[in-house]
Length: 345
Image (cartoon, rainbow, N blue to C red):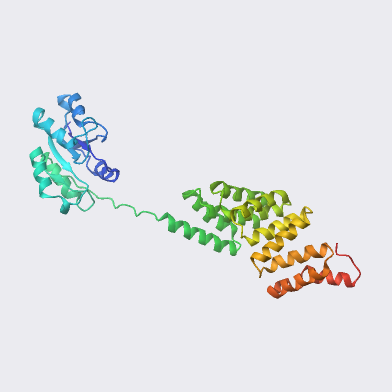
């Protein structure tokens, strides 16, 4: 069986190394990859004569770990003194047009056959032809495999998130969840994906799962206010008002001008009987957002329960003026109840 020509390769670029390792080995060439942190000379000194390389390819900027001199210079000197049969080719990361005449002359003085520029699919066959010729070998047919285009994960993620939001609006929760699973598969720390998962679970009335999704978002970023707001609302839906208040407290500590957080905390406080705290929160929400119809409605309901019907009516009328959807809400029912002599509370 014909013995293969042994070729040593030392390169400090992972991308370049991949190309060399993929295409240079053949039926005629055994390619041995030498790590840049090793000393080529010391390796050569330990190798038996029968296993010495026929050719050494070395990236010319790599320093020797022992002497801090260039590996290319050291190995060239060693080969001159000990094994003239070993041929040397220097490699560089620069394109051919940038290799200077000074560098070429230096390579000649070291005894290198040539300097090969940065390897790429376009010049690969030409460079390999030089290598095979110096080894007196016939160049085989080389099929270049096109590099798969890099996936723009940012664009893919944004597209999947947008698609998930659209599917949620269409009530296609299964399709939306599949989109979000893809996002999380590529990035397990995508907060928006977990928040949308929480929305889906909320729509499906699986509030415990929604809490888990929002909690995961908080674990990823403890300062992301939307996570606390959504989890707080979900705790309120589960009637775990103390947990809800804790989330709204944390949110307000992070963002003091969050009107919706005050409004939601006010409702949770009202449910545990903290009416003064609830009134403070509704007042604060309205101060921060004077056109906040829901906060006017909530404060009006609270005032009504406290016996302040005149102020309650003012708040109700303001809520309806700001958002007509509140027409016919709780207060119109309350008024009818009063007419009938019934008690609302």
